[in-house]
Length: 202
Image 1: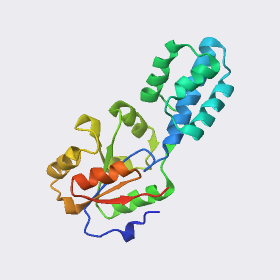
Image 2: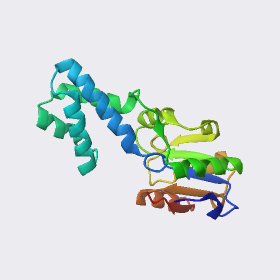
Image 3: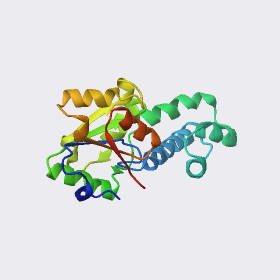
Image 4: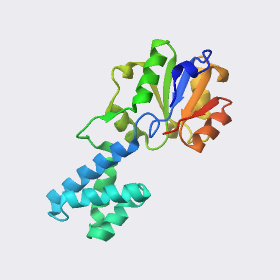
């Protein structure tokens, strides 16, 4: 658990990845699977949405999201033509429920704002999909304090280009900034820019 009072008080800005750092990506994906299952039941009547949703949930919890459409297609005989719908939902889904920040990350972000430090979300992956997630997170009023950058619009991780751009645009030095993430890639990303890194344990 990250506690703001334990950070170096000289830091002026904090950089966070999005998925599994600020909120659990699982909460987004399971809602996407639910929407797809209901769309498919409406379109084809089979498989039942409840049954397909449960399949997706178990497959995700067992092996993650990789090839999950192919697994469902094999198990239920889903037509290949629905792959495009599945992928589109990942990018554009309007979720039934708001995404909630991890409790400790909400407190951390609030403490950073109170101390008048800067917050940057620097996220990898498809920018359209990542922005769709950001728009559906319950930020509790924090959204106006966030600056968002998409690494794929500059240069993918672990290239430090987007971090170097942030330093330049916001008149910061590397020593002023802390990067927080869960993946080893994030650690290399920070190191390549000469920025301190802290790993978030979830």
